[in-house]
Length: 139
Image (tube, rainbow, N blue to C red; front, side, top):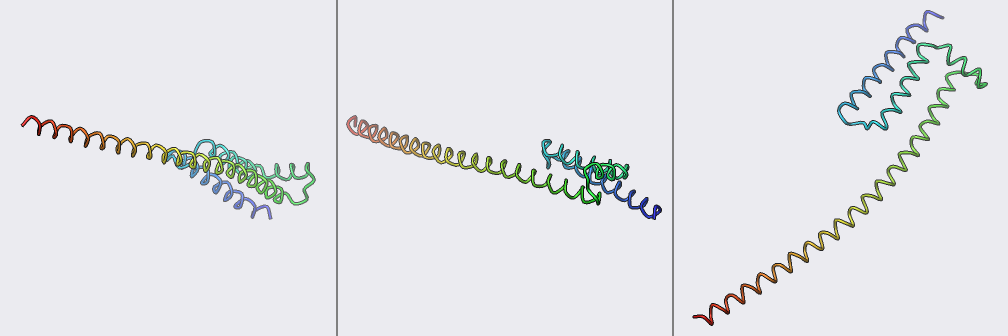
């Protein structure tokens, strides 16, 4: 049975390392912000740690009174996902509020610009009419 666990351990280490490399590539390309990358790097590091030191998961599970150690990973993962989703919801709400404010400001500035352009066009036509009337009286 111990012979089977070594290949699985190597596969889990390799998978976590590939995932870590993918995270670093996303950071370099600018597709993942640094504030979120810290979370992913931490989670991947924890997976690598428990892939290398398998008895650590059993030890931690026994300390917390969890009978089946992999279920502890699932519990922590689910809780982390819930916290992360709440954080993303807060960020999303804040961004929607900012977009609404920016749209309103842009509409207001557009309206002011149109009024200015209409005013300058009216002034230009008035000046042209005055110039034409001056030219008529001069001739």
